[in-house]
Length: 277
Image (cartoon, rainbow, N blue to C red):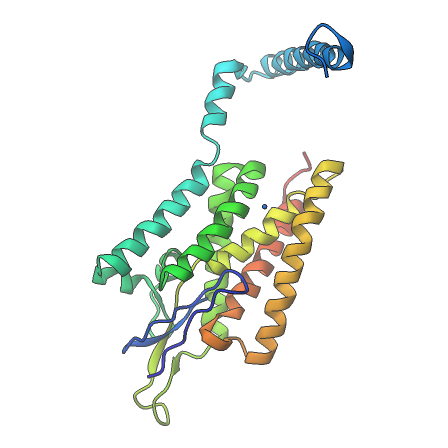
C-alpha cells in the first residue's frame, strides 16, 4: 500500500514519509550609579522594588503563606524550562529508540486508525517518523512551549501539550479514513498517525491567548506571535480544504487545525471557570 509522506516547509507536521507494509502514516523568535539619570533611576528602582518586595512578603505572612525569600525565588527560577525540557527529552528518546535503535515496541505507540488502543492517543504525540519530522516539531515545541511555561508553569505546558495533542488525535481518528489502498476494501493498510504537531499547534494558540491582557508589553507580544499563528492556521485551513484533510506528502492538516482549535477552547473554558487574577 502506498504510504503517506511527511512534508516540512510549511511548519510542524503530524505524519510520516516512510513506506510501511502495515499502514499509511498520517503525520498528524550613561553613567553608573551615583551620577546622572541612570544612577537616579537605579536608586529609585532599588528603593521601590525593595518596598514592593517587603509588602508582598507582609501580605503573604498575614495570609498564612510562607515568604519565598531570595533563595526560594532563585531555586524557582533555576527550575524554569524543566517542563519543556522533559517534553523534548521524551520526543527525542522515542525517536532514537524507533529510528536509530529500531526497537519494535515504538511502532505500537503510533495511533492505529483501524485498531486503536486508548493509550495510543497519548503515546502517538511523542513519536516521529524521521529526522525532518522531529526537528521541525521540537523547534516549535521549544519556542512556544517556553512561552506557555513562562506564563503557566511546567504543569501548564504539560497539560496544554497533552490536552491539545489528544484532541488533535481524536479529530484525526474521527475525520480521516481508517485505511488506505487495497481493492474494494480488501488488502487495505491501516492509517496510522504520529507526531507532536497537533500539540504544537495547540501551543501556538495557547501561547498567544495567554499573552492577551491589559498590559502593553504583553499585548505587543501577543500581536507579534499572533500574526504568525493566524497565518499558519489560515494556511492549514486552505490546504485542508484543497486536499480533504491530508495533503501532499501525507501532512495531517486535520490534526493541525484541531490542535489549534482545542487550544482556543481550553483557554476560553478556563477563563469562564476560573476567577480572574
